[in-house]
Amino acid sequence: MIELPQILDGEDKSSVLANRIRKNYRHVRKWAKRTDTNAFRIYDWEIGKYPLAIDFYDGRFCVQYFSRDRENPEPSVELEQEVEDIIGSIFGAKKKDIYWRSRIKRAKFQQYEKAGETKEFFTVLEYGVKFRINLTDYLDTGLFLDHRETRRYVASKSEGKRLLNLFAYTCSFSVHAAVKGALFTKSVDMSNTYTDWGRENFILNGIDKKNHPIIRADCLKFLSEEVRSGTKYDIIVIDPPTISRSKKMDQMFDVQIDYIFLIESALKLLAPKGVIYFSTNSRKFVFDVLHFANCDVLDVSDKTIPIDFHDPKIHRCWKITLSN
Image 1: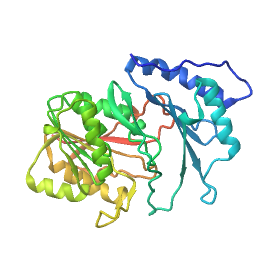
Image 2 (image 1 turned 60 degrees about the vertical axis):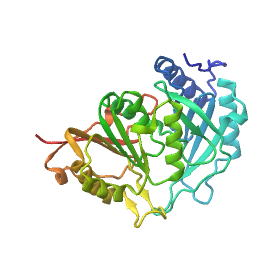
Image 3 (image 1 turned 45 degrees about the vertical axis):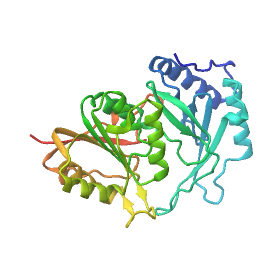
Image 4 (image 1 turned 90 degrees about the vertical axis):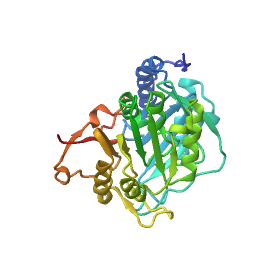
């Protein structure tokens, strides 16, 4: 059974942020203990003047500050102190256990940069499955918490199946599927850092790599080659970035432009009765079902948003199958 901290202080009518965090944590803590999960969100920008997301990772706290000001992207000293005092009061956390990140709306074609080089990794549990986390070196932590329920749902359908995971990041979809008995998974991502990270996640869970290859490749090129090979999959997961301009790619990737190629190619790889799960975090994305007249396309987003996320538009997800 996992251990989660108790709330150490009482209600404080003078702090709406503290009271909201307490309320959220009480609610999610019961669920987390029941599901063997110790990585979850405890505040999701529910109060306008606190543009933050606060995630709990096994006793550590990742605080994301959302700035609209490119000239001043960092939170004020006063806000940092207030948040750290609140987390310390409620959970007994020390300053060293609180990690700040600033997220600012970038120009459309601007890439996010690496944040550090400390290599401080630790392990969390999600539905009993282990994942490596890093709160210091990268913009993202190694696990997209908003897709927790998507991973669980896909894994529940994976026993005895072949799964292809595109834009795999640290391979969390594949690891969950393998734990649930997937016959074979293949994970594809362009980053050496993340493919290595994914291998560590498989090792953490005692999964033999023989039937779970991880490929470093441009997913668009990979799809073209895989279609020619005639390989088939029962489940294909496509969770691409909104925009990518990696030096390793021949051209810029834009999900709104490239999703048609991704899905059309994936359809050619589906085994009979196979299914594609396509998701995006782009709030402006428009899915034109008319491009896929031979398919059944179902928006399953409402089934994939976790209980600790209060923004119903944090991502959208579609289930796509070939029509009979």
